[in-house]
Length: 207
Ligand code: 3PG
Image 1 (cartoon, rainbow, N blue to C red):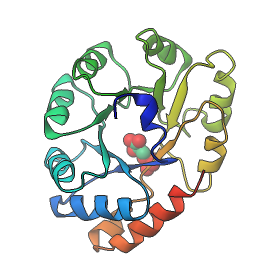
Image 2: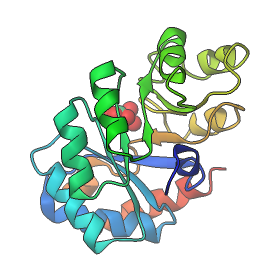
Image 3: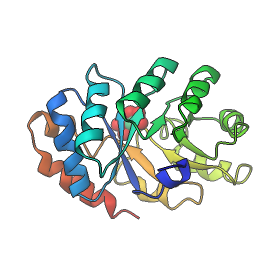
Image 4: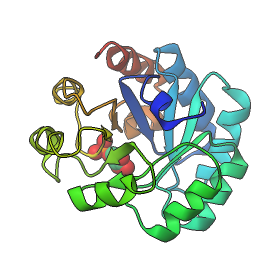
């Protein structure tokens, strides 16, 4: 995976994954892959997240593995060292984006306004995360900004559901959507990876 544009072509839905127990990392990744979803945004929100990235990187190589919730330069470096193939930020500060860009990995910078999108576009970035999608205006907002910013494409994330995903995916400026619904906390806690696989299968056929 060399460019952010290629990330948008792997799956219509990018699962946003929160790993609380390190033992869940590999089975979750395998279940998603078995369901036909070969990409993950694994969030740096828990103490085991970096270790989870290392394990999935080593043991489930068929997954295009990204690190999400990158909010500091240190996290960008740590995620790259752990084996992340791409990086995702919830928002876009110069400090974080400079560090993310310096890793050489493809990345999706998070934006929720036209001015933020224009700022990151000045760096040559064309693929962005639109976060938090629903709270920031959702489908209507993205449709409206396609007129002035037709060269930009988004991965809306935050409040997207299996019901709203097709509406986002129908927009010309949406490449994929992201969400946590493929990996429900209770399914992981009870070891119900079959449910994760079934949710992945449904998500993979959304486009
Ligand atoms: C993200 O970081 O993208 C969000 O936490 C997604 O969460 P949601 O799909 O549960 O809204």
